[in-house]
Length: 239
Image 1 (cartoon, rainbow, N blue to C red):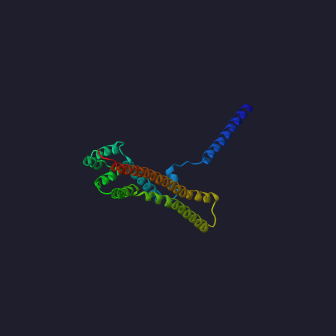
Image 2 (image 1 turned 180 degrees about the horizontal axis):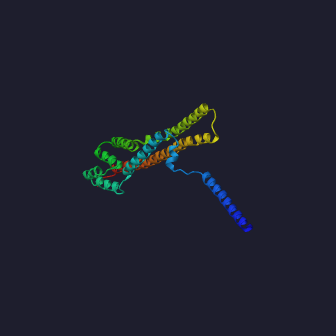
Image 3 (image 1 turned 135 degrees about the vertical axis):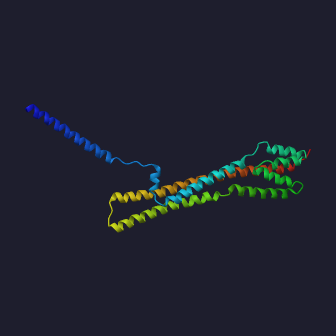
């Protein structure tokens, strides 16, 4: 009889500890922080995130469209000016113009304009080539100001989202009288997402703008070098 009582006592103790451990385990799992993906995190920013998405899409489109155009414009055959020189010195202007017209880049178009003005004063030739160079620069820099604009207004949209979020939070406090600390912290946390997103988009647009401007400057230098070399060729004696 005593052994049976001891056996039942041990069994009850084991069930009690199992229940305690299970309760602790459930509480531990419930207290673990919930993870969320990037899309869920961004959606907490509210409606102000949609203008930021539009700005990001516009920045990406303009960057790659301009990058492709500028890289195409910067491709210049290393032997292009050598062939032009040989044709001019030998008096074969027709061949030089044919090569320039069939080459699709700003340098070739500037040289073609110079070839069309051969026989006129050097100053007139330089002026014509400078006009073409300015037009080519305009083509390369087209829409770059969009990136500059996005770099300026994206952070402003982010800060606007923070202000809207704070106004909503204070409005809720005024209507309910009081809020729990967790609700206040959560509201501030979710509205800070708009500020972070705006700053990141603005930074990316700023970096893209300056990178493309650097590529335009490199192409402009090639155009200036080719123009100076062409003027030097015209002043060399023909064979």
